[in-house]
Length: 363
Image (tube, rainbow, N blue to C red; front, side):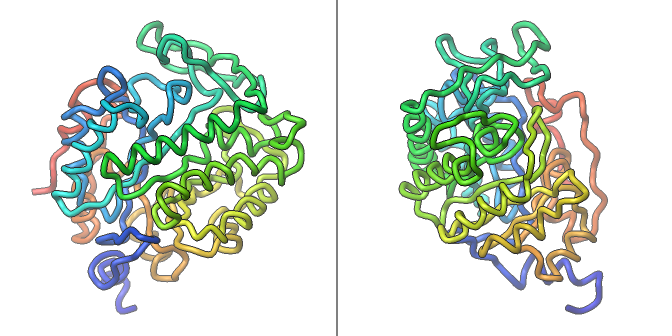
């Protein structure tokens, strides 16, 4: 592979343009999805969002912030949706700007399930989950500051096809908006992870109990999404053992091995894997063993560690989250070995351009 200092140029940038299913990337640097809470009224992307994503279009692939597939799927304040005509039009402007810069972008579809507050939702929207198990913790609302998470209503068996239909419709809307594909958010304690996990799924019907039943919802959602977009434009993001949002599973290794064994034959565009917080669980090794396809790995990578994992053939791409906040030109900085700028923690989720679009490229 040449000298270590040359490895990143060879592996991430010019010598290899990875094809993830039907999506051709310019390089192997992926912008990870990050909630930034800057959507406008009606959960519609605005010109501010257009500029934010345009600035970062040199990424090999942008995975958008999580977008809710329905009013019930919203958890946090000022997050965008992908189910109304106005939202589709807002995202079309974003995608046109990214494509004009030569970039590629997929929509991460994120149904928060039990993680949410009615104060962040439209009137009449509900907080639903596999079971009526309230998550411990609080969530920020513009109306009342920090509040306890809602107690969810358990979905009836006859309602589950309708929720799966929301993912199908969101995928259709994403393609209409010009996204290059979609990613199923299947971690962080949100609805798909709630179905997977023993601590949040207490159902006794076909969607609960055994691990085969607990993975059923995710598989049916992926089938609905791929039926619309084709498997080559659908990815999935996981983090086995992630306790975020009060999530607990008795045996995450078994759960995700079973899930990935069932998902692998679908021939998805990619699997996006976050490093597990459990030291005893190697999420990357689990993914390589049970998923035959392109892997994007995430969490805590820098220039040198990205070099190593790509040079060893352990992943097809590396995604960066926090590094992309203050470094819209991250690809150039990594390629040329330039220092990375810090970001302002206080403005991560605040409205307006400060801490969002005012970070500058390296001189």
